[in-house]
Structure formats: structure tokens, C-alpha cells
Amino acid sequence: MSAENKAIVRRLYEEVWKQRRLELVDEIISPSHALHDPNLTIPRLVLTLINAKSRAFISGIPDLHFTIEDIVDEKEKLAVAWTISGTHTW
Image 1 (cartoon, one colour):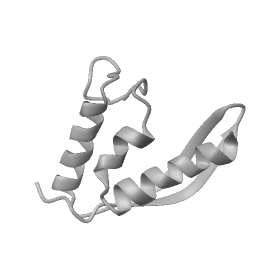
Image 2 (tube, rainbow, N blue to C red; image 1 turned 120 degrees about the horizontal axis):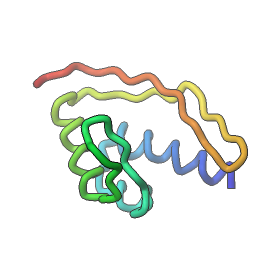
Image 3 (spheres, rainbow, N blue to C red; image 1 turned 90 degrees about the horizontal axis):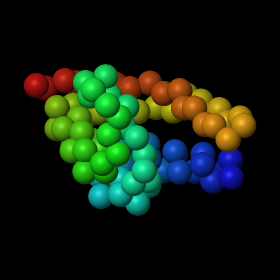
């Protein structure tokens, strides 16, 4: 399962963020995924919210780029360390 989970994470950053294929969010992220956002009072379980936030992010930072620095998995958990860069246009 570890290699499969890493592949999903890499696909998220490569295809969704780098290639801007936002339509893949529904395919890659589980509908039960809780979006933890400091601007929300409770975790949200809505893929449409994730899609909207992704589109807003790219709209405001059109040259947005994520670089995966490391992926660590242990005991059924996976963590990604990344660097983000881009020019804020809002």
C-alpha cells in the first residue's frame, strides 16, 4: 500500500498542481477526505470545496509550483514535505 499511496501523492502534485489538471481532484482525493483549513471552523468533507479552493489558489498565483522535498511513510501514515513558490497576483 505504501508505494500506491506515494504514487497517488506524486500524481496529485504532478498532474493536478503542475499540469493544472484540476478535473483529476475528484479522481485522486477521496470524497471522505477532510479538508483542514485554518479559515474554516470545522473540517469539510466536500470535494467541491477542495476544487474551488484549488481553482482560487491557481487563479491568485498563476505560476504556482510545488516541489516535493520528501515523502515519508510509516505505520499506515504518509507525510509530504514540499516547497511552494509563485507570484501572488491578487
